[in-house]
Length: 225
Image (cartoon, rainbow, N blue to C red; front, top):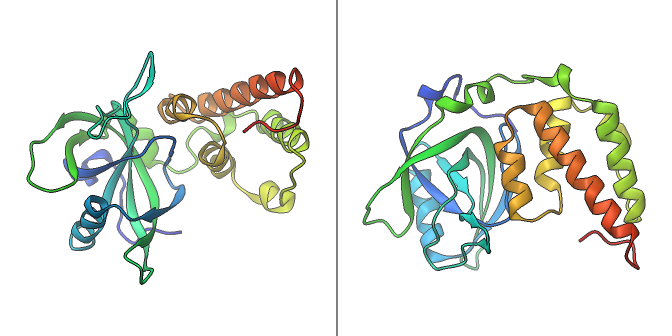
């Protein structure tokens, strides 16, 4: 899904953005993430961004040694991903169905004290300047190993996929889409988000999947969920 507005450098993002803390969710540059919005504070967030630049920062609650912060107002992870709201639908029962299209990762520099029901942070995308360049780092990815690992995962879970579409997809699209769709937990999703480059993200995804396959082979049943 294309974005009408141009985002070519860190300075094109607002300095302050509303954030949506969501455990286990992953948005990456140029990826598309559908979301079902029903909590009043996040309905208010959507109303606000529709009247503005339509930018939302998707971020996970902080992950500590004992797991993710599940309090009502969790401490936030240091890194999230800014997305633009590119699709919007009212359901008639008080929910919004939206799609966020990823622009760039960001680092939180400060959470602001605000009167809005949703949280807002001052952010910088400067550490992630490469996110603004489409296809950056594709040549370094071991695409064949990634596809082999995907095939092993699908076979272990008795699943099928559209291999024609996968083979036509660019390497960046493939790595980021598989990372976003992967069935792993918040810690793994944050590692995929914070990977230094596309090659590292692919290596993390392959390693996590191989470990899951190894664990599954030692247990009854094929599921990796």
